[in-house]
Each structure stands twice: as structure tokens, then as C-alpha cells.
Length: 399
Image (cartoon, rainbow, N blue to C red):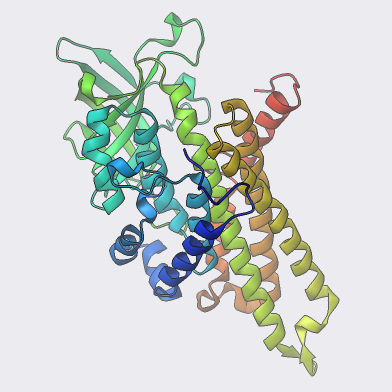
């Protein structure tokens, strides 16, 4: 990761100001109806929006310039996502996590030279779509306990297992597949023996089954069954058996970018609540004249501001190449506080709107559902607290 020349701190600079201005211009082209179609049951492909993001350089934000990217960092990427969601592109953070973080960040950090040259320019241009297969039905947060196993053969590897809650697998051209290459019983540390593979989700050896969900996201969710999927040494990303450690360089940006999206959605909800409170009149005056309406909005806004400072600081620390432990601690804190503050904000906005808040016309109920999801994924608030307690406060491991 790199830090912009004009961004000496997480307070921002001219580069970030221009990025945010461009993000607002992109967002202005897509109204609530568009995003209802994108995140609704039919999952309209947001191809026009995604191409505009590519043309603006957003998809190549973290990709080095020699591979067709902008050579910037998570600071700029999180600013893009926050600005897009704040201005109505609800659910767009998922698109950036699935493609830019899982794809571009992972390959830029750990891909081979051949992988970088083949895939990074296409990711930056929006021509290549990505997804990640990590979560399993019987493992969940306990990733070292995964059952998916890559057995070494004369030709390479044969991978068998199952994955669950895999976003966008139906649209993806390539997939970051996480599998055990050394059995759990044969490793000294349970976090060892896991490898990252670059896989083809459309291969005949991978069966996709869509999961029926009620959450407003632009990506469908799938359960994957891998039955003898064939991979070779060239498909390994990074170092064999060290994949879980390398994955931290993906998971921490995932936390930060997801948190930025939650914060942006929270801001959007409160801005709509404030607009509604100024306009809605009951008993001869706007409801916003009453402290019972004003105070929850003001209180929630201040919490969002505090959460956003953590998001920005964690992104800046990552770009400044601070040690992995420090970045992980801050990323988990940012994700915890952002998801909690954002959901409170959308809940306040829903309450301010009263019965109208449940009408899709106002957009608040969809924001409420989206921020409720952010308290579960990526990484539940309980696991964020576990990490802070153990790694920051040196308390005994609780799980």
C-alpha cells in the first residue's frame, strides 16, 4: 500500500478531495429506483455504474501503476466507498469488497508476477469480476477448522469440500479459494497448512446453489460444492501453507472498506431523517423542532463521526505500513464501531420517518436492513470484541 504525497495524515488532502468529488458525480447518476433494482430480488447487474467506476479509476485504486492502476491505498479506497454510499449507492460497498479487495488487493500483495500481469489490468478496467470462497458450513469464524482440502497429485492439486455465503460467485470470472493443503492434525499451529488458490467458479467441478436471503445486496449468495476441482502450482497465490497469514492482508482491508460503506449509509440515513424532520409538520410545526426528534439524530451523528475517525485512522495506518498486529486491532475496532453506529443511525432515521420509514419510496428500510447485515458480516460484532479483548487488552482467549 502507498500513501498519497499530499496526505500526511488521515485528515485528507487534495487527492482525496478530488476523489470524493468524482465519487459524488458518479453517484448522482443513479437514483433510489436503480439501486432497488440492483439490490432487490432480481439483482439487476449494475454494469453501467461499475463501468463508470472503472473509468474514474476507482477499481484500480490500490493496484500499482505498472499494472494499470492508480497506485493509491486503502485510505483512498475507503473514501470512495464512503462517498458513494453516502450519496445513494446503497450496497456498492459489497461490490468493492468482492472485486477490489478480494481480487485486486490480494493479488497486488501476494500474487505472482504472471498473476499480476494477467489479472490486475483487467480488474482495474472492470473486465474481470472476482469473488472469495472462505466461509464453510461447519467452520464459520473458525477458519482453521475448514474441511475443504487440496490433495496433492501428480498434476497439481485436487480440491474437495464446500463453501457457504459466497457473494457473487455466479458473476465472477475468478475466485480466491481458501483450502487446507496440510491436515490440521499434521501442523504445529492450527493456523498453518492453509493455501490460497486462484480458481474458476464456472468449472464443472464446482456446483453453485443459490441461498434464499432477505438482505438487500447487489450480489447473490451461494453455497459451493467442490468435487475434485483441479488446480496446479501456478494457481497458488503466495506461499503454500501460509495462506491464512497472507489472508490477513485481505481481511483487514475488507473490514475497513466494509466499515466505510456502513458509515456512508449511516450518514445518508441521518441526512434523510433531518430533511424529513424539517419538512414534516404535525400540530402546526415541523417535527424537527422537538428535542425528542433532534437529540437522537444529533447523538447518532456524533457517533458516526467518531466511528469514521477510526475508519480513517485504520486505513491510514495500513497505508503507512504499520505492523500487522496494530492494523488488525484498529481494523476490528473500526468495523465494530462503524457497524454499531451505522445501524443506530438507520434505526433513528426509521423512527423519525414513522410509518413512512417502512415504505420503499423513502429508502430508509433498505438502509436499515443493510446496516443490520454489517453487524454480522464481514466478521460479527462479537468476534470484533473478542479480538479487541484478547489482542489489545491482553485478556484470556474466550473462544
